[in-house]
Image (cartoon, rainbow, N blue to C red; front, side):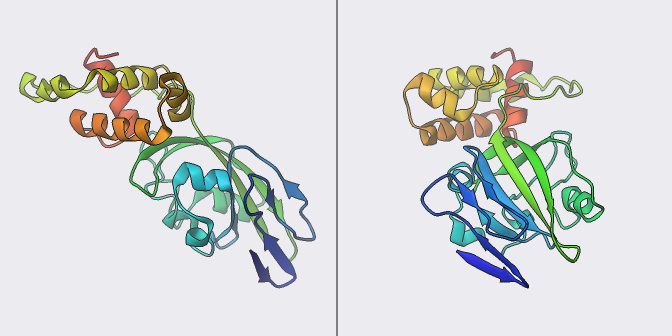
Length: 223
């Protein structure tokens, strides 16, 4: 794939994790983690195979789209929006500033909630143009603490009884900071099976994302 913008040409390597951006002011990016590249207009310009596996979107589905339409629901763990029209990462890049690594919750294509860590590289080009390289992986850290919430009425706790032994096992592994890939390897199942179990746990506990799921499990004494 190549896209021209003025004197720029950008190519995303096919069939491997290496991501090649062929522009006069860039060399070669190689990463095992998911990599996506956006421009000064927040347009997705490159998308690696690892990004496809993590988020579920194929390269042809995302190239040319605004990044916030791909990273749907992108928020910091405290609920502050990150992936939207006023993206703070892009604002910093326009001012010639970098952005420190940050954690973000987002949704995969199939609606699976993801807890991600993003590292950002800003690459400046001619005539005030730039590229933002986002290196993304599932976070292995424990979810941040939140302010304690009032205990739910006993009637709301009946949903816990419906958790299967496997779901409890996966919930406890998530609480220990294990990624979905780690859990799949430890339990000798596919990562898609683990994601399905995690989604079921989320629905049964009545929470909206994986962070809340783990915290709810801790609050209920399940982990």
